[in-house]
Length: 95
Image 1 (cartoon, rainbow, N blue to C red):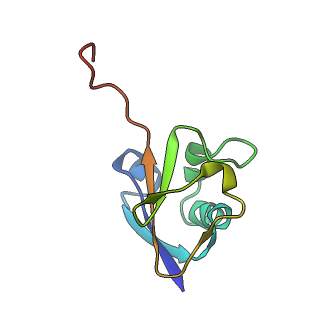
Image 2 (image 1 turned 180 degrees about the vertical axis):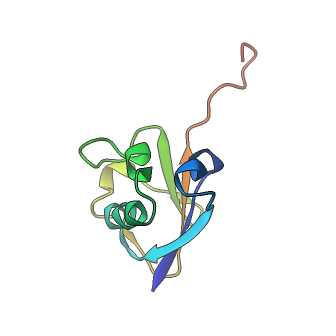
């Protein structure tokens, strides 16, 4: 089975404009590796050199935020939606 991955607009330059794709389920780490095989260079935008998710990237399983520190063990089940969201800042009175 597969997982649907939702890619933010800010990263579609690395996916040829694709906003949604399907990859085989597995751990978050495995899914990021599979996503990188489909879209080379996207993983370096999502992960540090040691493979850990970058601090400014949040992953949501359906609507629940995942703990990035557990990316090697977090299982993403078949049929789930994994959403990738970069951090957003600003919006205060000073911009």
